[in-house]
Image (cartoon, rainbow, N blue to C red):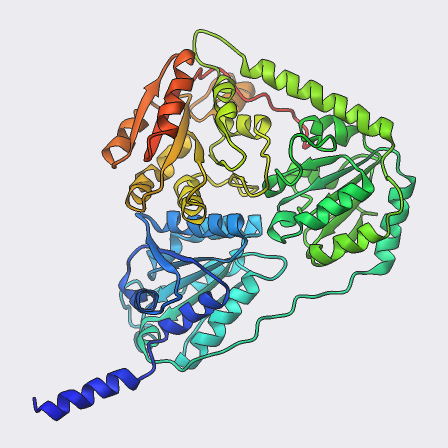
Length: 549
């Protein structure tokens, strides 16, 4: 080839717009996204090229399963309150994101998923992994679209991030045909949306009057107070109103355990005894008995009205950073009598004493609660505690009270197992200096333990505690209650610690209660993913009540 032809080719290559994948990554940059979670697939190579070449692009983080990548994106969104970003190749890559995307929807987590798609020019011909993803993703996202042409890639990418990050937050999906994603695309600049809203003053006045005449008010706060960055506004409201608080989900830690108004440990008593219950930032789902609190006045404050509510519920919707200051400004005196606050403080103290007694349980085999007697003193204010499991993680929710918000992460109301490695990967990347403790049921371990390999490769140390009761505890005991026997609920006393060791981490098995503490110390000082496989009594079940409160 003549020399001048080579020069012309170089000029053409340098002046041509970059592939459309750069427009997707530019949208992520505008929303301060730091990581793109993925598993390598040819349909989405232009995204990788953009991340490698753009100076402010998200860092590429690969996993062994798209499900882990999806949960890592969801975990990032919930911990950092910036959009989580995940990309998957066409067909099975996208369908592997269905569970984490649904989990993000239930948790109000802003996640943007980009899917590969068979080439547009070959559509309908039976190309590799040709699948119309949109009908599958539409029901579990805030929006699901296809960028069929090059000029739509940039606008739809910005739209996906803006929609995911606006109240009520949640996941969005965009797939892009392979030939479109590889084609040069023009720059696209978009203004970020203004989410300001007006507060309904009539609804506000009715709420203030209800608070004024109540004698036993309780506030329940949920994840959206944290996700909506409204924790400081809530603290100002609490200081002014002086109402006892029950914390759920990611709102745990907004009030520290030392605050006398935090009565989460006495949750059941508080909600059964209250004459007014104000729910802020969480839906009225099964966790709150669907809003059925008997004769108590119910106030529901959310960033967007969603889901059913009992008749006569007082509702107020809008950005919580705006709604809560408006509410606080209208309060002129303490809303809860001191006698009521003291009664709940006493109940909280007694509940914590009972929890301590439960954690002191001794027996021929290790009671799962006994593990937490050793673990809790080893948790710091900055420790991020992650739960993935049934019975074993239920104990954690009962015993662990975070000192700061954003330090507790569990699967939430969708109840998906397999979140563990994705959440841990997200936490380790977002907060590399903070200790990570993962609480893992032995059933849940089977969903994602292979992705310890990802923790090892990305140098994420974590203490992994498996409460190994050799079975599916959430099914074993209810089935025995219903039928007098159980079936399909037994597992082996598997050596999950050896699996982690084989993947580049470390671990050990524990069968005696006296060995739990030293094993945890070794794990926390190891500098690698370290699994403490604790064999617990399979006959011990988490002590559940039969009501939603």
